[in-house]
Length: 234
Length: 234
DNA sequence: CGTAGCCTTGAAGGTGATCAATGTTTGTGG
DNA sequence: CCACAAACATTGATCACCTTCAAGGCTACG
Image 1: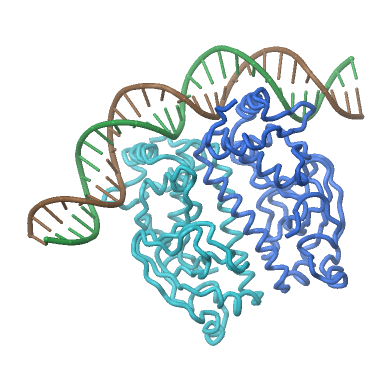
Image 2: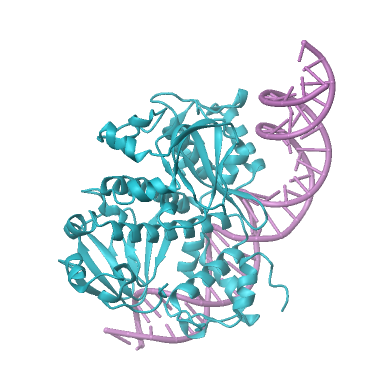
């Protein structure tokens, strides 16, 4: 199994693994590799779903706004992830969520026609898309099961997951400029609460978050907290 | 578009719509229509995923247990829904959730071999499965966006959704024996809180929940509450 | 050097969790 | 058909966790 971290060249994408270059060329017809700046949108909820994406590098959040205008992050995409694949199935659909880059990122943007012509009838690709969706759904279900646990558990679990998904092997620094607001929007809480929590953790030597990036100093502690085993062992 | 409510004969299943009977016979090879009693399990999380299911009638909850043993309901399946389709993709996978019947229900249980042989390579079916997954994922995302709203909003939204999905056209009675515990397990709360809420609503004439079934008397109110517009208009 | 985005801290208050006890209905076996 | 158990519903008291509101500080960057 290939590591999902880091940066991918187009023909190195896990989703294309084992395919011949000629076949891949067909699959990316009409595709453009687009570079996105921090906070730039890939697409917005409600827009007609004209493209789907393969994230090549960086990070991307999928989010929507609730009735009161507050943002809820429903998913963090990491390099190699297909984005907006499912919504290609039906013609004329609208994107159900918005997508925005976190930090700089690159994505391969493909037109829906390519999906219809090349992807929809390709069993192997459908299978790999399904696998990706399966993983994503499992992650959402994990999160839902954490809903009733205290905030500390949810934030710790998120950080552990993000570190696992975005950092290379043994690195302990989250390479994406994620804000406390975004953490709050993801776990369903408020900035202030997340800040208080992470300040405590900084003081306890679990995190180091100077210089606007998050470094995990004691992953074991964080994992323990995410399991509800409480970090009362300072 | 066919209504997803009610009861389906096998060859009336929306997922088979437009297919010839002979083709359908191939697709359900090795299948058995199984009748489930209230609270009976279709499968358990952690079991090897040897079957997938098409719910013919009744209702079914997908749930898992968290660290502390508490149940979290991640999805309610309604007639016509494919269950455990995604997990068929990879050989040797384990079910990520448990599934149990709510009230009496019927399901068509199909072996994984049939999936592999007949379903995996069928673009139309893959497309319809994907559509179903897409809907389910959207619903989960909707719920996640409600996470920070008061309990009343989440319960009202759940009831409105369930009524829409399980009741026939203009009926206002939820035809499945869903308990307050299950409502709590779905919205991420506790029985007591749900009971207090629903008692208030009963007194306000919004619900009637004598005789162990839930009747919605004022759907408009419920919808208003689910939108956070507060039902202070008694 | 001023603005924008992000982080921080404090005080006050509410929503909902928890614990404990009890009532009610349903189902099952004798 | 009754009796008992199991599942489900209810009510009250208490209190912790987290939200909300308000104010202010820090850092980057044009």
